[in-house]
Image 1 (tube, rainbow, N blue to C red):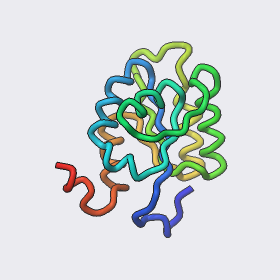
Image 2: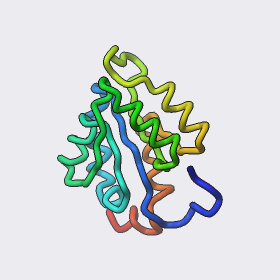
Image 3: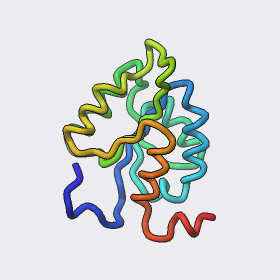
Length: 139
């Protein structure tokens, strides 16, 4: 959970989840922000974690979303182990086996965890949390 003293450069704890139809978008996002994400502690469901590893980043994984990985991430949000949740969801056609973003969004709100559910908000979060100049050095 973030407090007023947390807005300083530090090792952010970021959970990432993506519906199946958003995995390609997540792969592109992770590749674009590899420099920033490399300095943070990443947590993901198994499928999303594989994409993050392919981009050359370290990530701790939990179960697949369909087997309770979203609940495991929710528990880490509730216990203050996550600062940011990036959940790229498909609002048009999430499949029945995919994680439900509703309970995770509620937990993020309840525990003051920053939440991005689309690429635009994820871009804003990464830029806001990156150390001064990290984004500028990357280009």
